[in-house]
Length: 239
Image (tube, rainbow, N blue to C red):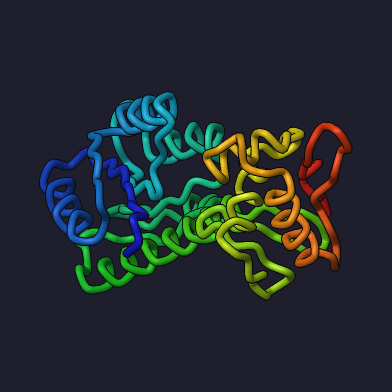
């Protein structure tokens, strides 16, 4: 089961519209935060950023007191250029629409709301958000070791291009120790401690497993031996 969560900031000055939209948003998204105008909306978003939180979607009216929707969008885009928006408005202003074409706007709802159309668009917006999150998570979990081999942190699997490299438990454990300390030389003693939980393990036992591991990555070996010091996965491969 995916544990990806979705957060929405709803900015709407009309009480009835805000409550109605909040109700429907809460049926689709995991968390919905409310603001009554652009000034409050921007303040909430900025506070969240300061606390390392973001909103996947900002749904906002355009005509509001203090800071209007367009003004708030401009402020938000200075902080988050790729922020997604959905617009809710009682009027379809051509000037606003032309400006929105250049922004990351997923849709434009006209009041009074057509609930079926709105729900369909919100569901599509959520699917797009989740796809983005999955792709980012996948990229974050993959370490490109060289032109041939990639390591998946989420599954502790090693890939030769698209194919999984079959490793024994000890071979996999040795590789995990190296991956956890990329760029650092790991001593034989450290491997014994981490993999065998016993520093008195015979050196030959370690060397046998290391040789088997290196034989399996012989196509493009990324484990470097520093004689008398230990082993290292020297650096990440940059395309």
